Image (cartoon, rainbow, N blue to C red):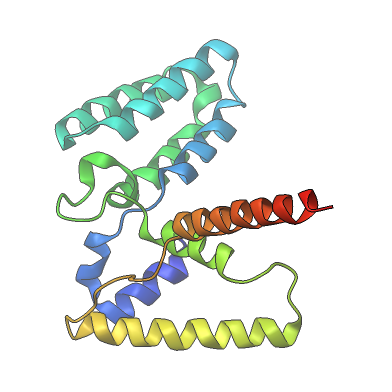
Length: 188
């Protein structure tokens, strides 16, 4: 999670909110792949395996064991020295990335990704500047109302049809229309 976003969340919801955030593992994997390309093929495989084990560790003890193995791997040759600061950066943010540090009483998916997916399907692409402003204002007002409901403990979450439900409905309508066109065309 970007530093500005994290600071904003802490500012609005308090420092304790930082303990409830879990960022996307995708970004860690993306950076893992980038770093592994700088290594020879054999070392790259070992590095990727250690990174995967860091992610998949379910307990802090398991994480610490793999982290120690990673530290030893990095220290083996000076060509891997650049990985020390990289690993340190991720380790400092371990509570946001690695499963061993994830809160147990929180959603298992990255909620931001769910919101982003909703935005993608809400408005058509390539809208005019005026339409984009209107959509942004609508989303801001909606978010403000949802935050107030959350603060008051009355938030119920989404109640409308999901994207998949809307797609199914659209498909049924198309099938119905196709059948109607078939009947109309067979008339001739």
